Image (tube, rainbow, N blue to C red):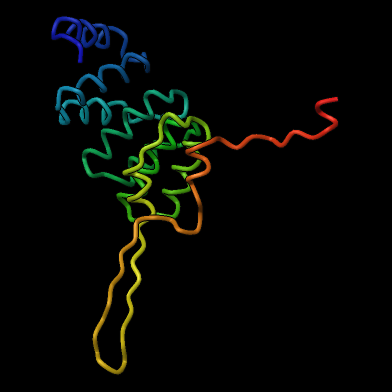
Length: 171
């Protein structure tokens, strides 16, 4: 988090150049880091523009809308395909209850940038609920699972996949 003097100078610069998307994104992030969601929401609402030109601004606006509980608006401004946008899109889709789409967005983000891997988010996106009812006894069993037993991740985590080397490759 930046100090008050630097942050105030950024806000003054934004007042002088309101069309500077990079500066606007930085000031919005500063407000979010300080816990000033109302001030960040005012800036995003005042901008009210197209976020496709600036990934940083789209991320900042998406975070503001997500933190404010306006998930549909957050999803609308996250139209890019960078790893960071896809990761935030996964969080928004999870908040909307669209786990399958969220997991696809999460996987896309991790394929592009593996350092963004978030095991908690992945587990939340993979939660499965299976309800078993017995017709004879009337009892019910509910099983909640947060792992994807259909896909093995252990090999990828222990050793990344490598292309096989054939005799023609060695010479």
